[in-house]
Amino acid sequence: MFEIITKFGPTLLEAMGKTLTMAFYSLIFASIIGLFFGVLAVVKSKICNIISQVFVDIIRGVPMIVLAYFVFFGIPYACKNMLGFNLTLSALEAGIICLSLNCGAYMAEIIRGGIQAVPKGQMEAARSLGLPYLTSMRQIILPQAIRTMIPSIINQFIITLKDTSILSIIGFPELVNSAKGVVALTFKSFQVWAIVGIMYLIIITILSKLAKVLERRLSYDRKR
Amino acid sequence: MIAKDNIKISVQHLYKDFGKTNILSDISLDVREGEVVCIIGPSGGGKSTFLRCINKLEEVTKGQIFVDDYEITDKKVDINQARQNIGMVFQQFNLFPHKTVLENVMLAPVDRKLLTKEEAKTRAMELLKRVGIEEKANEYPHSLSGGQQQRVAIARALAMNPDVMLFDEPTSALDPEMVGEVLAVMKELAEQGMTMVIVTHEMGFARDVADRVLLFADGVIAEEGTPKEIFDNPQNKRTQDFLAAVL
View (tube, rainbow over the protein chains, first blue to last red):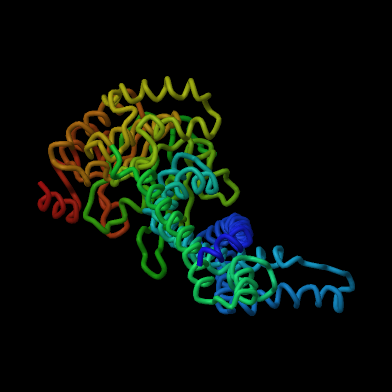
């Protein structure tokens, strides 16, 4: 066990770093996508609502593995053979696209729910002061919605962090992929997978604790 | 445009349906500058809906509403601009819970660039003093009593310097001992010449402060008159029944 840690520790840590990089960018893009489609789902426009719903349904209805293959192999193929230009996506880029879309769709649902949970009177009060819709959303509704959404968002972030492992199938050298390599070299699957499991566990535990702190910080009902 | 200069709110042949249910039919009303109009009547009579139509929180089905120079019912009206001129106070206060009392009052004038931050702060403190809660300026709404919250809500609406104030059952969600403090603020506002439309169940207040009382029932103005006429000598059967039930 120690031999593996001393010998392959740096490799695994580096891979962990790649996992975190991929997760980090994905979460940022997913938040933007989620916010966009989440707001689209609540605005007073049937077309916007439908667009949001269709996006969420499509992404939710397709397994991530299929999405990953589609983005990594399918899209460059389509560009080359159907649209006539070359597009090469690195495994990292493809991975980030997949995770962003996937996580974004779930985020959109969380954000929609969070916004709808804010009492209707808040929007009415803001609008009756003469604030435009989007300003009211940004200043009044979203700050309140975020508070109720934090637990679900962190949960989704954790799922996305774990989902990076699925991207091992398109060859991105994240933690699981690297661990496979280490197992191939050492044949010590028990030890290697135990180490990898613990590494995920540590990161996710830290993230969960952070979420708890954030949740407490942001609540205005309990503080003071 | 409104024909007469001193008319602040003009409602003409207003109809409002929710789906197939008719809520208001053929409501017409002019409110003069500085006039206090109280709307009373049984619940479900359309009082709140009528008030909410005036600042377009509800879309009207038919008819016209003018507030000052704005035709609220015109599709092309700049509703944000129009609403700045119409203060609204809600039954449930609807203060912004994530903002302090002071921030609640400052927010809209600063965001709409009517005042700088400094000016807005000075103005907000003035208003909070006027409604008697300047010492709570830096607290969050949830630490205030209902009566205090409603007074903040009034200050928040006044911060936009509106010409007209709408009150939607402002004391209905309050504990009885807090009703008085809110009504006192509203009375003071009326005495200072604010144009007010108030949906209320406080008959004493209506009798005392209103220039005119309207009784809404079943989506129409069943009776209209001075407080004396309505309370002492009601003509309409529905007014008589309603007053017999509440007084």
